[in-house]
Image (cartoon, rainbow, N blue to C red; front, side, top):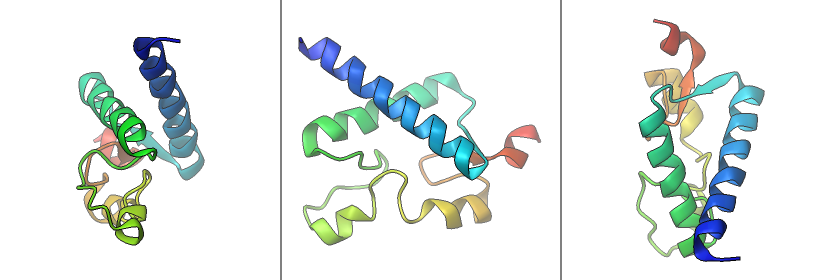
Length: 100
């Protein structure tokens, strides 16, 4: 398998995962397709580079304990969605916020 196929496979796996997760939690994904694609690309890049789905909007520090908090879905997303209607990177949204 070449690099293009590898990245496409990882992106597909990530998209399926975040879709299932959003549905399970009652969230929706960012309705802007370009932004959503950028976020999926960032997650795939981090998966390839670091071996984990680190949030593309947070810095990977090299401290395993701290970085673990930033594996998507990060430990902060639920509070952010309650407070702001979406997570920090704007991947997951509260359904009510998208309907507005």
